Image (cartoon, rainbow, N blue to C red; front, side, top):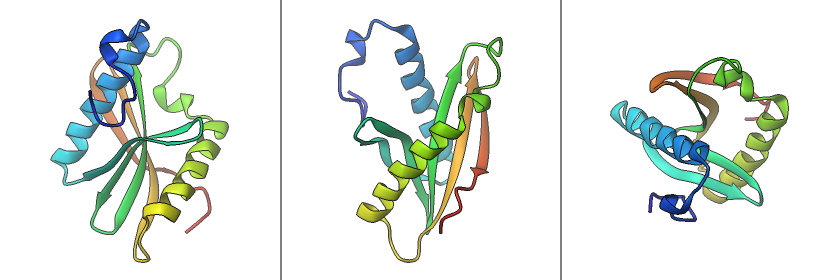
Length: 130
């Protein structure tokens, strides 16, 4: 089973869940090819989840991955609403408390995959902390 996944994807009946996991795995390969170390995949705080936490030196990025078959329902980036951002910030604060280091610098990134075409938006939003 892939890291961070709590159940066997072979048992998943909703194809969107499988597509989401495949997108996360593609994002992991992309980030690793650019020198990032994946320190957490699907980091959970209650019902809130960070898709990826990655590190390069003292820079830590909390990454939301959105996978879509097309844009008929809008851009994947548009799906990262204010409520989703607040959830990400809440989970990121817990990660920082548990795993952060005094010299770390933090940012929030988004990766969109549309028909396997990847777009990485670094520093996608700033919550106003650290």
